[in-house]
Amino acid sequence: MRAGGRTELWDRAAAACVLTLSLGCLHVIALKSQLFPGLVPRAAGPPINYKTLYFDQKIDHFGFLEDGTFKQRYLVADKHWEQPGGPVLFYTGNEGDITWFCNNTGFMWEVAEELGAMLVFAEHRYYGESLPFGQDSYSDSKHLNYLTSEQALADFAVLIQNLKSTRPGAEHSPVIAVGGSYGGMLSAWFRMKYPNIVVGALASSAPIWQFPGMVPCGDFYKTVTQDFARSGSHCGANIRKSWKAINNVSSTASGLQWLSEEFSLCTPLKNKMDSVSFKNWLQETWVNLAMVDYPYEADFLQPLPRWPIQVVCKYLGFYSTVSDYQLLHGVSKAAKVYYNYTGSSSCLNTSQTATGSLGSLGWTYQACTEMVMPMCTDGVQDMFEPEEWNFQAFSDECNAMFGVRPRADWAGVVYGGKDLAAHSNIIFSNGGLDPWSAGGVTHNITDSLVSVMIPDGAHHLDLRYSNDFDPPSVRAARALEVGYFRQWIRQARKARPKKSTP
Ligand SMILES: *[C@@H]1O[C@H](CO)[C@@H](O)[C@H](O)[C@H]1NC(C)=O
Ligand SMILES: *[C@@H]1O[C@H](CO)[C@@H](O)[C@H](O)[C@H]1NC(C)=O
Ligand SMILES: *[C@@H]1O[C@H](CO)[C@@H](O)[C@H](O)[C@H]1NC(C)=O
Ligand SMILES: *[C@@H]1O[C@H](CO)[C@@H](O)[C@H](O)[C@H]1NC(C)=O
Ligand SMILES: *[C@@H]1O[C@H](CO)[C@@H](O)[C@H](O)[C@H]1NC(C)=O
Image (cartoon, rainbow, N blue to C red):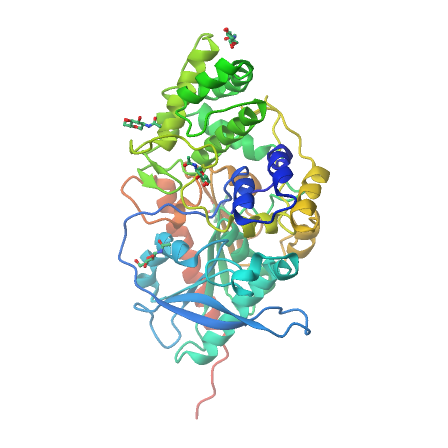
């Protein structure tokens, strides 16, 4: 999931994209915004083995004129399933290829056996292979019109109803929704909207409050800043100074050349506009590091050492004032921890911050319609250049790109905003290091709307495979989560009316 928010990030890209709705063009735009939570690092774990299946899903669940269907992909692993009636753990797919989320949600694979559960991973419409209009799905706004979270939730509901009625032994299986990041938002909303279909939900690193008026727009970048501040002395302060240093150095042609060489850029910086893109790219690099600040070596957005921000901060420990050149030399060393940990990168590409970009175009459209997530910086409480949230400018960019304007208040109306107490059986887990926790549910709402905090966890660490370097907090979180799963399954079995047998 990527956040589309910051207007400056959109301005340049949109200028080039007004006329062409090409993938390449939008790819650039999406890369100018943060990677949304959703991408889970690959880790070693038990071998995974699933069947790939397809289900004919209505293109439009909510109107009756469009009667077409499309093939929704879903994956099933029932090796450990106890039938009849064993539970189903149902992953509510994010904005991307479902096999990738399936391969990387080690937690589900690890608990399947102890729960006797079937695992199902359902792909979100418009991503991976689940394209309602085939390869034309993104060709115009008319086709994109059916890319909404409401339609995706209805897909999940219809698919589960079908599984229960067609799979022998599944009729009375309690189903639990699981998801991380945008997939976690969907799992929480799924329980809220379809309590008849799922008995509970685990929403990991799900920023369901990152919407207008729900949390301060600056909290996201404040969290990023705190991660750097606590990972090395003066680290955040030196990054805060680096923007002015870049402005100074890039004001001359020879300075631009120096910067390009120092950072081993694939494409040398030529002008002021290039240096603005360069700063955005660096900013996004620091955000990505905050998301994947895991306690062990991992390969997710990039291959990285354990606690990568601590490694980055080793190059940013200047105590006294140093020249702009010395400071930026340190910044380049730091950036190369992220981009060249394996030593195999020949140059740094300022159009890329992550390997494997999943569903960036679809997510940009979702950010431009329902998923409006305000973000801002002030340069005081965070280490970035000040930038206000500007809804109007954001809306104009969306209109130029897709011919649609976002509805700022819709997510709050349709999913309840902060008034959730009438719901039940949802776990919201959040990592204290994860910038997306700023928009997450980090306090208990009721006895059954529970917040699980993982203070030294980054982005949905709990959904990853277990690891020897896991902090005790994530081990405890996983144990608590499985405890709630068991409780919901027991509740569901008790509530089921007994058949009157002679
Ligand atoms: C997921 O794992 C399966 C089986 O190992 C593999 O075929 C598939 O390519 C993987 N998908 C991704 C996106 O890595
Ligand atoms: C600003 O840049 C110029 C050259 O571009 C350099 O001579 C000067 O030292 C820089 N200022 C500081 C404070 O480092
Ligand atoms: C990446 O690291 C290798 C090995 O240290 C080095 O040879 C190469 O120049 C580095 N690449 C960049 C872009 O700095
Ligand atoms: C940089 O990344 C962009 C976007 O992925 C790609 O199109 C381009 O070819 C890359 N440039 C180089 C020099 O690798
Ligand atoms: C919420 O309640 C549960 C169960 O009592 C507890 O384990 C958890 O720590 C609480 N969460 C927070 C954020 O206080």
